[in-house]
Length: 58
Image (cartoon, rainbow, N blue to C red; front, side, top):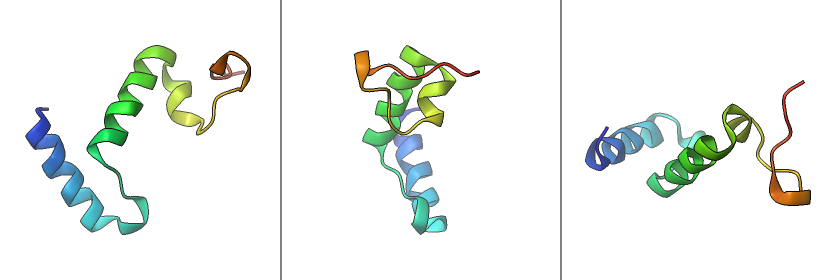
């Protein structure tokens, strides 16, 4: 998706889900975390303070 398409998607999403709003910058940050740490980065809201890494799945 291009930026314009993503922004339109997020606008629609935020209208339909006012309790779960998101933004383009939040999506970009999540994408970077996903690329660095995989699925676990999306599942955990906070990383482990030591070394700022995400815990591995059991």
